[in-house]
Length: 257
Image (cartoon, rainbow, N blue to C red; front, side, top):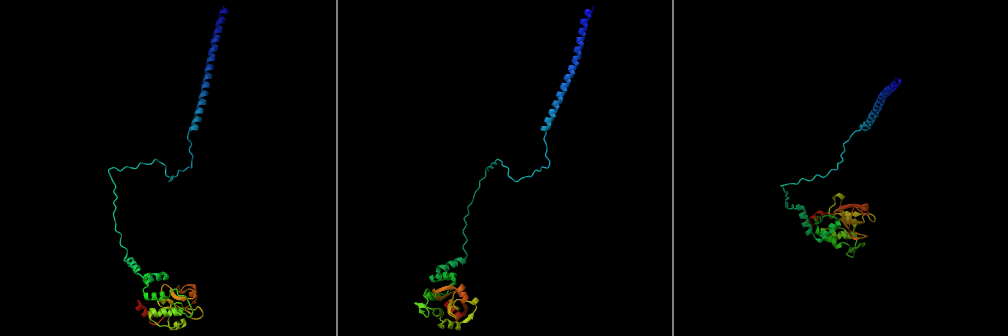
């Protein structure tokens, strides 16, 4: 009897032990699963935290004027329209009469006028006293000689005496000092063509010349002979004494013109 009971008891005990083991395994699996879920959740949160965008504060966006490279926009083709360029011929306006008159004056000017317009640095139409230019040109370049009165050599006062007589028909004294005495003294601002200029080159009135235009005068220079100089050259400016006008010189100039 006891032998029959012992196998039954061992079977019951075995069943009891199996049933007790199952809950334990179940509980263990549940814990494992929950821990694994927890670990997965933490990994997901970590991943989501890493993947989530972060915003940076205190950053301002400023528009720039730099052109953005882009593909060229194809030009629109004009359809049904044509462009016509008309050329209108215009006739040039005639030059002012002043230039026409001046060109005609230059064309009709004599060689003496052209020559002395260059020497005097003045306009050719300003040289109207042809007789004066001719008398000066007869002597121009003649060498200087003290006391000389000919084309072989002439001094300053003899040259002035000859030109004044030939151009204006006036008889004046022979020496520069005597010519200074008979002339009417005038200011340099009153100078006109044919007036005399006096200089102190050797003491007192010792040199004389004939005023022309544009501060220029003609004279018999010791170093250059009969030539044209500027009265404002330092040498002559420092030695200038005065200017004089001969009697009836204005009337003679008018008659010559």
